[in-house]
Length: 169
Length: 313
Image 1 (tube, chains in turn orange, brown):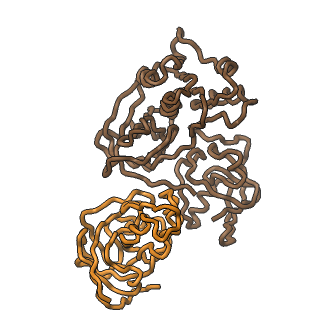
Image 2 (cartoon, helix red, strand yellow):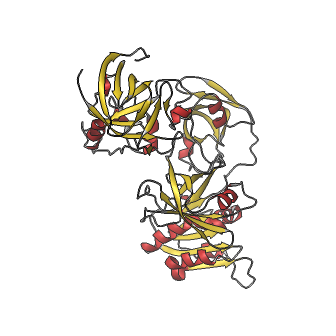
Image 3 (cartoon, one colour):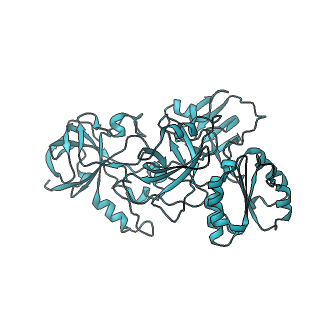
């Protein structure tokens, strides 16, 4: 697999339901999460249910498509800003749905795809916008942090083309 | 269930109003505009002492650069207003939910009746009604003189403002029965204030169409006759049954069982923990849901059930 992507935005929230805050750089800790994020702190909505949620990613291309109502499911486009979708990293040029079970690199950090993110009614309630169906199958990727480090918007994202030993489904 | 995003706002300005009242002007910490809201809306303030309190927005909903709330220091309150007066100053960050409105304006002319700090939601409502020439009269009664509030009300009420200061022996007295007797039958009445004021308005409008009567409660409408009894909740999706003892709420029991359930006021007044139910006889003790909504929804922070209730979870 050959592609070359870019990290556009980094967001964290200190607690469940708290608004996401944009970071100019983030410290990712292997096996834990992004320093300061609710899942790193064990304060996320789904923290009581152990799962792969150390860091979550979403494609900017998916958000662009939803904004132009493509495919036309809702009658009109829905704008979901980068601070609203509640994934940590907004990326461009990265085929997230192909990375379940594989390692890839953002700057110095190595992530591996654990499972596809599934849209939830919780997000729909929080945003008060019908985003559940438009996000279906393009809701992003939940990842393990295999090698920690600091990342910044603009960092290059590249595949490592290596299967991961971490649980994935 | 209704959940709301919690924002990080900054106190742009803290104004000392009359005596024990302050007004906080709040802006977003990262963006130029705040979420839109409609007159009568409130926000939850998540205090740094862990408490959550509701405050009505009193600013102009057409100006989304700032929200304003008015906070009265209440020594006998539940510790929220006192904390705000002591702890929050200009430049401080404060956690505030996006707005919610349980006290929406309906189309048509209206009489507004406010008691004490209950005036706060009615400020934005009165302003909006005045802009469309639908403010019939605004009645504001208060124990103490509130010149800053009165000045603000006068700006949009003009001659339709009536104030009643109970500590002033020479001031005129609020006569709710005369106001209601003289009111045209197609008017709406919006009332917010102490329970005895709202009970009086309710009593005097008992034969009115309930759609024309609107009350905002600061304390829940609990049925004091209801003695808490244990009951079961059944989770519709899994069939799981959980026992709610007489000294626990449904909210407590769900959380102890690992369910992620939003809540805020825990008094049945904010609407955050609204939950749909599909079977059972519910003892409603909230002050949010109207009669129609109570047929299949309940506020699980305060309301209970006889024997069992099946929750749509």
